[in-house]
Length: 344
Image 1 (cartoon, rainbow, N blue to C red):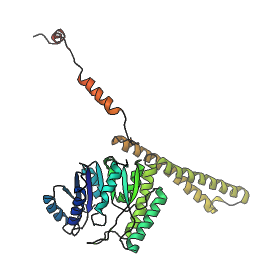
Image 2: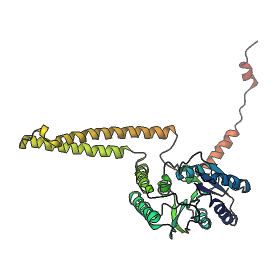
Image 3: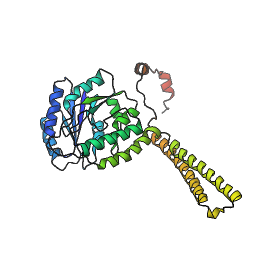
Image 4: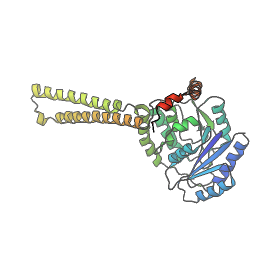
């Protein structure tokens, strides 16, 4: 299988059939073998039944039906786990992403050596106040915090090498940060302009409330990307700063007591210094506990704290070792066998 196209679907009954036909038309003419994986994310408008009927007629269509609505990140992750193609394509199911952009993005992966290609909607056909402005603000904030080079992090049209999707694990609403997560995996990535079309049916599932979700998820991504394997740097660093501040304030309180005659029980700075000291100890202990949890997580899951992008010379040596092992002949003399047979 060359390509797996992943479509997360939530109440898109009016656009499903047309989108699947468009994808088939584009990929049939490309010469690639492909599959379309549609994930119904607990739709309530009959989208799941349309997919069931469509899968009977279209052999390339595979359908996953969630028991309830879990969100787009869960749908993408389910698609990643069930994809069989060497190249994985994700796109929205509302018809605003243009399937005609897929072949060129796949070419960049296959022929130009990129691991990840993300689309950038240069002429978005969305409402400015409700969609484009919040999206730009969120993307600018994410770029400022994570230093990512991508501009349109909200574009779902992306193309991956299969190795990347095997490594990616999406939780919560992390689909907005896929570009950042992929960069954290050391992938060779590029952003390309793609066509964006106006929604022809249904209504948008996004609103201004997602901006607040982005802010909370951004904290998680910042921590996981920079300090997942060394949380003591965050908690311990904050603890040391508070401890140092507590010592300085305590010294100043002692100075006021000796030279200015200000008693401790009348000085609020003494209470502040004690609070800082207690918080410092708590943060240091929290950092140590987090370090233990990280080590337990990686070792219990047999995960590594690093990723190997390429192995050279290992396959040949492994096959040679297997051949040598299979060619070993064990010879046992009849006398030795007889010596171990008990007398009757």
